[in-house]
Image (cartoon, rainbow, N blue to C red; front, side, top):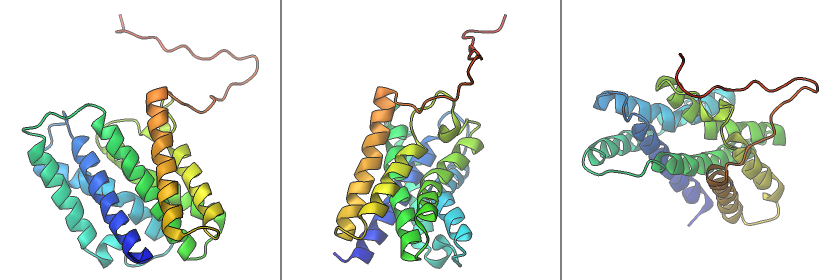
Length: 219
């Protein structure tokens, strides 16, 4: 398989996975099938759209190739139908989100590197491509985005770590192997963060106490 074919297949897989995650995020939000499809499209294509606009790539990927859009729509419809009859684990959404993050972060880095941007921009595009769609999804469903949650596990940091590995190894290893390892790094880090509750250190000013969060109902 050529490297171009590998990237294309990985891109479509990322769209399908993130679209499914977007559809699952509609649970309990009283959305009809059109709402679910819109949420899936935004989740799966939002990050790539922001990346392409930022890098001045026109037309954006899903306009240039409507297969991406159809992949998102079909994935959303399948998820809508299947989830009406099959009960899925609560963690499935987070696992799919981690898979999408791994795929899209590396693909975002690959596109920026192919256009000969600096390492800093490559890392930024990896994070934007991997995280932006999920952020928009969370906002539309009334949730605080995972990347911004105070008590959330590592998220954008996983994409950053994979992107750094991709940049450092790009000139010294087979391109497909580098991409696969970078994706695996991101996915494993995200899984470890979820199940081991890994977090970045919180910003604390010397001499100031942390604000305590009161649990329970207000009385």
